[in-house]
Length: 207
Image (cartoon, rainbow, N blue to C red):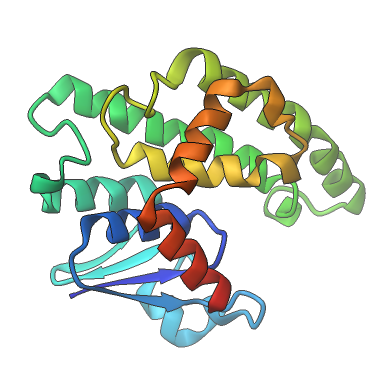
């Protein structure tokens, strides 16, 4: 059975939703960041990066959201969560999730994770002030160039959709005016209506 290690409202939400969409047996284990559980010896033995998500599989441990999402889509091809029969389309999906991971998520992280990149308090404040601008730029690109609609990759729901969902969930807190992005807002509403999303959000809120 698969085991997902997650933290509520973190990027691990994307993997959590995907597992729920698949419907296969899995266990979800919360990593308590408030208690710094991610730095405990037991957790570091699983994921030395001290982050989430971490997915324990029969073949070993996987980390990094794009890798986990691709693994899940390929492990359950009958769920059609990625265009696995089209190498170019699958690469396009990977490009989208890579952008979410390496650009949009990193821009978001500058709001509260300044010590990753600098030591001076003044630098942290400067990074935080920049977040509304950088995240708005990310959503402009997503709205106008990346979101094919009604789902990220077009007519079919894929593993890119839970990833965009969590980025959008963070957006207002990052100073993004979602009213400027009607297509992203419509996607967010579609995601909120999905039973798997409702289940995951309720579970994480209660954890």
